[in-house]
Image 1: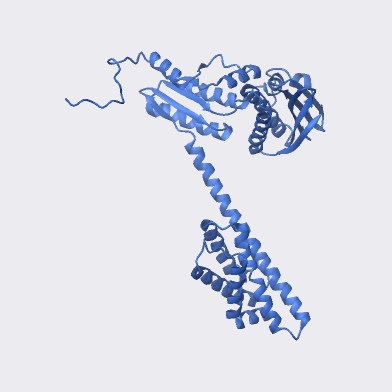
Image 2: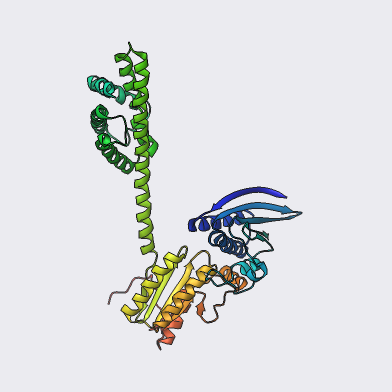
Length: 133
Length: 290
């Protein structure tokens, strides 16, 4: 169940910093431990940068979700970019098309509890992550 | 717009006092600006506007260039004085009422012309007010750009801890532009001070993601190519766990939790050690007279 939500644009490098701060605020609101906060913020940073650089910009939806007694933060990164042709390969450690370390997507997956990626060539990519408290 | 010009010139005194009264009633900020200065500005602007209105009604035309220039000055000085852009715009807009009043008195006999003239002069004043807002925003943007540049320089100090040991305490977000500045200042400092060891401290970097890690690795590799050893310090527990989960390999890099630890390591690499010279004395007590 979604308790509240908000949408933020990701159009520039400044926005990456801004959505990172948003993620930290929402995690702090749920009293996440410092380690959990840092993990969520780092995953946000990776995925927001992917949205900006590979997806040519998009949005981040942030939601406070509830599942029985558990509460968590769900982040949805959405872009209308070129999409990912081979998701399995994109999730491999060390695979990169942008000259980075190739750990952003696979690393973010390890930093959160739930990770879902949908992509269609020419249509864009949507990545949804949840970190439970 | 010729009759506007006539009305303005004929009733200059009445319009000016009407304008000042209008401002006193609505937008006056006597805490920020004295009466004499305001009166001077208003009189000068009214004179320029009346003069420009003789030749044209288009505020972007050559005839209005002196008016626009004067408004830019006003926008800048008012921003420095602490006015908001909308307060500066209201300064222009509050001229409307007294001008309309004078025109109504002058053109009473011809309502069609009155409406047409009021529309023209109202339009011109609106545009000028918008221009002052634009100018104010532009000046503010200039301040922001300057501060960004200053911050970029301030945020990357290379400090010498000891002969041959440099430290680079990083604070804030590490993006590509920052990394370039960091790398350049570190590498040139290594050459200038002939240092063998450089310590990069990331205590003040809030988020270490793969991009930041990549930038750090590049900087450290470059320093190594120059023949200097490079240590990474200030890795907080939360950051350490995140780096492990991300899968970033920092095994090749000498890391320490605290800057002091890295400094200790640097000293021992240089064959130096810190020893206690004599039994510790209470620093806070007054030295005894000999």
